[in-house]
Length: 300
Image (cartoon, rainbow, N blue to C red; front, side, top):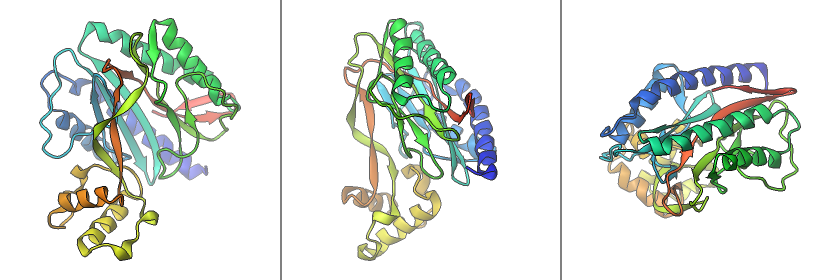
């Protein structure tokens, strides 16, 4: 990464950190999830950044990939555990961070453990650290607290305009001898549930976040309205995940039905909402780090 890219990454991290701190106060019983989501995205833009993906607002057993669709009326229920996962980019240089807010004393211990596991992993990472050993640190921290990590959710390497580019960072010990590289950028994100949970997530029958890889779409074979939408998405989101809420600026008639058609035909990729297999609540903590010789710089 060149000096200009690193500077943009650091700026994006500062924006994300400020927005994240303000996001805690948004979580209140009865508040509509879409209001939280759009407030976070508006704050990112008011700070001079762009959302790197739709803000995720996931409640209790919903672990990831839930971002309210247009006209979503869901609200924060009593005693909820709410995850807010947000990303910021500047010219494609991306940071990713998340918090959990518990309205229940019982679930607060999950939040504290996720945060503790994140701190332990960040302290452990430096250039040359084995990827599998990072997972071991996270798993050990969570299990010592009496809880269970979600084994099939991971952190991830980040590159320009590529949120999930390169290696995955596990939340459990695995025999992966690969090492993190100096100058690389990773999102570290422990997910924690109760000891009697399955410790894994499954796909729900719902998708709220989408992505277009223009290189894989036969644009010449599309209908005119499909071609117009594909070109709009490619120009505005540049291969990053997006929400149908973000299509409001397009003047394409019946845009949501056109979008649904492209999803059903596989032209547009969908990310299923992920839920804990036994429907136990899940907490998440996440930050983005830049790897240095003797440690790592927390960007968010």
